[in-house]
Image (cartoon, rainbow, N blue to C red; front, side, top):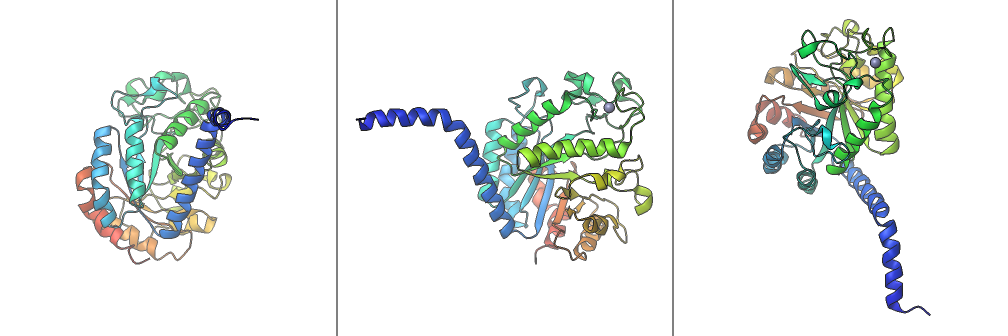
Length: 354
Ligand SMILES: [Zn+2]
């Protein structure tokens, strides 16, 4: 007959073996339950998109959460990119980072206020900015869509990784896992805006390929991991899915480089952040995406008049897949002043009544 003490020992051993897996499953189910509750409480998504690249910025954001909540913010898209304490790939950490401990702290504070925090890593495109190439293509130059080309990043907008490189996803998925776990996320934003280098003549795999199919492959690979495996919601900027000419947009906020056909090759459960920063009479991309069956989160910026025009147009779209409004900031306002910035404060206010 076993004594109580020996059962405790046996029980502890079982717990020790099953512990991490059980705890991960428990944490996943708790996250999913929180997200369900959040959705029920927040039929309208009132979001802010911002960059957080250090613990100091994370602290600034944490200090603003109550003020942001007071102006109606219930979701934050936090673009961290490579500025994170990646456990899986420490070689990709830049000198200034958000630590895992700080990410946990920020996520917890946001959650306690009912604010959904969605981390972001720019995928595929935006792998450099001006002369500076981001760590992924510095450490793994073989992932570059244009390897060895454009020294100093001259004559290009931003570098891209190659969606057909056989090794790139393994690294990227590990980074996404680190960020999603660090921020206890139930959703993930993959960026993917303004991808100009795709199907490049300099890529031995993609040369002569169909940009729409290659872009869709990148989206579908990410979806398979984020939604399929990790059971998170996936968000992306949606400019590459719009035909600039057909819809009358510029080559920035819509595609003039052959990727727009990807719209019919990617899953409809991806949330499309449809960004437009110009004041226009109408924004045909919004009904276009809604009619295609996607959920749309219109994303404006500044000036105030443009943000108001886009927001007002979006509000006229009576569709259950219209999520609300996402205010981007792009460095035009510092984190401590964000809640008082008119393009956020005044425009989000338009979405109060729902
Ligand atoms: Zn390629």
